[in-house]
Image 1 (cartoon, rainbow, N blue to C red):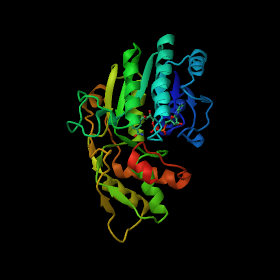
Image 2: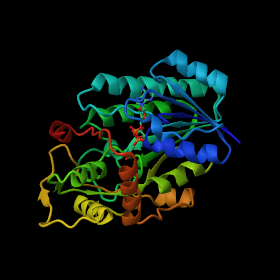
Image 3: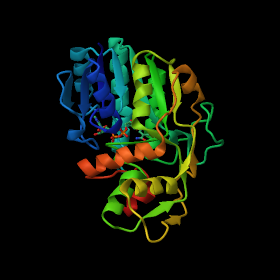
Length: 315
Ligand SMILES: NC(=O)c1ccc[n+]([C@@H]2O[C@H](COP(=O)([O-])OP(=O)(O)OC[C@H]3O[C@@H](n4cnc5c(N)ncnc54)[C@H](O)[C@@H]3O)[C@@H](O)[C@H]2O)c1
């Protein structure tokens, strides 16, 4: 049984990790300010404590570390919902991360797990699939810039860390990216379009599996890619969503050219993760989408989020 602190634990990824950890008997402390998280994401448990607050508050972060004494920290809190909200991105993703890292250093905490955006490689990667040797060029969005600064601060310290650079994560509770938008529009009989891009998708249960391995000590200090190693067109995603909803469209969905701040494809090479964590993606896209759709049908979508300027303007 471990004490695990999860920042952003009321969010999509953090809450799924929390579920698995407290179910197996670990003690979980969540800190979340509900900027994009949902209260109903966290199932009550005797092993779970939730603190409403921000990681930008260094005194609060230090107090939580001193009282709870985490042996592992899952740092999932991030700001991204307003592409023009540079100050909040910098506060949460840089200052908040510095607060977490320095508390880890001060208390000699065991291992930190971080989640990095694949946009750290820029919108026009130099290779496909992208390897871990690819230069970091996060210049096109405030989110990517600030998340990369956070990763750099983690690396600057001496704490043992694993930074998972992620493909597009999807599944129940996911409120960003194209899937919740497709669900929302299709179920309201609104016209949809898909952008001519390709993405590598990672189902949440597959992601949580590798996170648990990291909590249990697998992997070495540094960055890893979490991806299936296969990219799909957004149209594939759309088609799987209509299938899961049992909807037949009268005409094929419109395919639009991509926005200037959008990458054509993001395909991460997961081979080092496959090897060091003895892990690979096992959930087929159609199965994962069906589960996500079931969740949206049961819990609804209150708000969807994007850090992409052009998409944000359309919402
Ligand atoms: N979902 C993906 O595809 C993806 C891809 C790459 C990286 N990531 C990273 O994974 C992590 C989790 O993302 P997610 O998809 O679960 O998003 P999410 O929005 O569901 O979760 C982020 C959580 O952080 C909380 N939060 C924001 N600012 C905070 C602050 N100052 N203090 C405390 N809590 C705060 C939010 O309320 C939310 O619950 C983030 O660090 C994100 O950058 C996600």
